[in-house]
Structure formats: structure tokens, C-alpha cells
Length: 420
Ligand SMILES: Nc1ncnc2c1ncn2[C@@H]1O[C@H](COP(=O)(O)OP(=O)(O)OP(=O)(O)O)[C@@H](O)[C@H]1O
Image 1 (cartoon, helix red, strand yellow):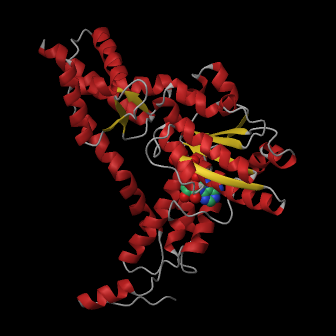
Image 2 (cartoon, helix red, strand yellow):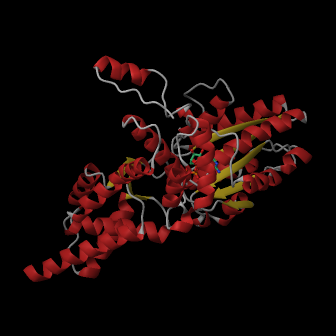
Image 3 (cartoon, rainbow, N blue to C red):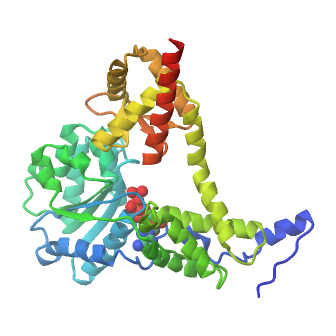
């Protein structure tokens, strides 16, 4: 039985917080950056990736491998790709082939230029921060690989974002690299990570064919799969015997896709971590289901608050939200430009016989909904099309959200008719 110290004075409380935790052994195992030593239920995906890259071992430089990985959020796309990349590099080293693995997040490195600079800096290449174009930076990278007889696998994570915000020329350059360089030896291979295939299918055929060579789909996790993933984390992150099996099952069942959840491993791990923190705060020697419940409601609270503020919106901001939903559904994209949003909004207005509000008023609605946490805005990177405001929803598009917006909209429209 674990004894819980009863603290009284401020000093005692702080002291007990500073001395070793009775709940956690290695809390960093629960952070998103942690790469676990094994990936339950992604063994098959690792095998598929390895098969796709076998050419690099059998005929180095013969082909530039391209793999697309797609699947919903939290299904292990990033962690599986990184684990593959680092292990593949080591395996090739033993075989006398020099290969580097670079993982770039296209949401963070928003432009082709930033992206190429990130690849260069991962390879520790000294490149002046100003003066070179992306194409020139890529040339420096390629020359470096050539000189050292090295190969490179670049993973472009959140590639949807790059496709949605970059010019056709930049996408073309990146993907059809070997049309630019006359090199016979193909040293650069790619893994593209995407949420879904809609953004790629909208691309020009010549670009699409260069991307869609091997496609690996990541399915949302089922409850028993999350159970295995959580069990590993419990073993490595927590003190022995502090997380009972039923707590793990409870969390797995909330998120398990087969139990009506999203199949998102990230949220399952976050819930486990928060449940542990709550147990610690309550001086409980065990992480109980009640702690997991509290953690779950805290994690979902933010989404709940956003839904509440939608309920209070007036007609025109609601119509704008409806337009955003329509675009999300039609194009399966998270982020839309202000121009497209206004166009869709005007379309809805004309359908229902409402005069669309003017541009400045629409901007004001967007600004207010941003302050309420309902939507998010950001400036697009500098592409050839210039800068534009990009708008996205802060909550996932679920049937629940759509029903809510439609219901409130109907209420506002009914009220309008009554007051006419
Ligand atoms: N099979 C697995 N085994 C162990 N941990 C996993 C597994 N799958 C996912 N995880 C963990 O779940 C979290 C989310 O995984 P990851 O970031 O790879 O998902 P993703 O599909 O890339 O999500 P997003 O699309 O949001 O980037 C990470 O902490 C990761 O380590």
C-alpha cells in the first residue's frame, strides 16, 4: 500500500511537491515529442514503409521514392514516420549507405523557402539567411549530398497545408525536383503526410502522379488498440501499480473509434496524463476512473464553451459560420481564404433572401468570432498570390456541430419572419 503523506504547512506542501512524485516515474514519456520504443498496432505500417523504401537499399540513387501517408489526427502518422526514418538511417549505415532523415512540419515552415532552409539547417549546412532563393538552397543541399555520396529522406508533415497555401510553381518545384536538376543519381526521397487525399486530388495530374506512388492509410484506433498504447505509456511513465486496468479501459473506451470515439491516440494519452496530475493533486495513491472522467471533461470543456458561444450568435455571423462549414465539407479543407468565405456567405444570403453584409462588417464578425475562440485566423505565407487572411474553425467539424449551427440558424430565421 502506498502511503500518502498528509501535508499541512505551506512549506510541507511545497516540499512534497518538489520531492519525487508518488504517481509519475517519468512524466516526459507522456509528452507529444516522446518517441516510444515500440508502436503497438503500427507494425504493419512500418513494414509497408520499409517495403516502399527497399529500392534505396537495393539500388541506391536509382529512384526517388515517394510515399503518401494519410489518416485522421492522432492516428500515429508523425510518430510512425519519425520512428521509421531514424531506424532506417541506422539500418542503412550498417549496410554502408549514408542516409539522413529530416522531418519538416509544413505548418511551422510555411513557405518553400523556410522549408528548404529547415532541411539545410537539419543537415547543418551553413547557408546565408538572406540572398539565396529556395531553388538555390536546394541546389546547395543536393551538391552536399552528391559530394558525400549521401541520400536524404524528407518527410513533409501536414503537407495539406503546403498545398493549400503555396503557389503551383512552388509545389511543382518541390515535387518534381528531378526535372530541375540534371542529376542522374536520385538522392532525395519524400514522405508526404496528409489528413486526407482531397487536397492532393485537386492538384494538376503531372504533380499528382509524382506524389501518389505509394499510399498508406492510417485508420483511427479502436479501443483495444488504444488500450495497448496506453498500457505501454503507463508502464514507462507511472510508478508501478498506480494506474488500475479499469482506468486504462475507461480512457480507451472514450476514444476508441469502435466505441463512437475519434480514435485519437494523442487525446487518449493527454487524458491519461491529466488524470495522473489530478490524482496527484488530490493526494490519491491511485489514478482512478473518477480522475480520468474529470480529465476528460476538462479536455472537452474548451470545446463545450465554444459550442455555447455559437448558441448566442446573431444571424449574420451564423451565416458566415455556415459558409465555413459548407466549404469545409465541400473541399475537405480546414482552412479557407477570406475571399472564398465571403463568396460562399454571399451565396447563402442570396438563397435565403438576406442582403449580405459589407466587407468591413464581415471582417468585424470574423474578428469577434476569433475573440470568442470560435474561429482562428492567420495570414497566408507570401506566395505569388499575395497575402490573404485564412480562416479556420477552432472545433472539429462533427455532426453535433453542424446540427447545432443549423438549429440556431433556423431559430434566427424564424424570428426574422416573425418580426417582419
Ligand atoms: N501506435 C502507437 N504507439 C504508441 N504511441 C502512439 C501510437 N500512435 C500514436 N501514438 C502517440 O499518439 C500521439 C499522436 O500521434 P501522432 O502525432 O503521430 O499522430 P498524427 O496522426 O501525426 O496526428 P496529427 O495529424 O494531428 O499530426 C503521439 O504522442 C504519439 O506518440
